[in-house]
Image (cartoon, rainbow, N blue to C red):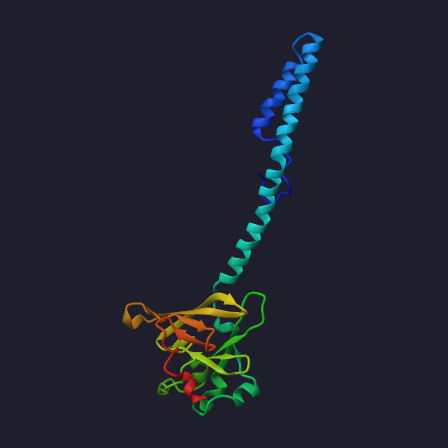
Length: 233
């Protein structure tokens, strides 16, 4: 059965054999009466079997598109994306006005990164100080700041969680984020991998999972995400 086709109109092999036998018998010399009766019964038998088998073949093939559509939908929902720092943008005037006081000194270097499902409008965004932007143009020996940890906010800029590490860089560490398991445009899980040359290559952050009950992210252990980043709001 060819994938993607409609109802299968090709005769099964078992029926083809019977038809070939009928054709072969028609070439052998027989008595007219016997030949007519034998041919009639053979053709009638083939047609009867085909009438019984055809609906089954149609129903079996009709189920295939539905199965393929379901599989494609599940794949889309589960699709994982790696958050690219290049996709992050400076804060708007409105967003800057809503930053907690502790963030104000770094506002110029703060970026907004949309966590958008494939083909959908973003419902959640990551707010993070881009350390490289902050130190751009500053002396090489400038002290390292105690930057606030990244926030996760909804479309109303309400804090719904936070991260333990700066994104994308917290020298000498770098953070890679993967988001997926989409539902209603919200990534149900956020996974972080820290690359740190100082500790054997890095480590994995606790998985953040969306809680539909209180509309915020919690670590897989059940703890509220990060170190109470939202308490500064």
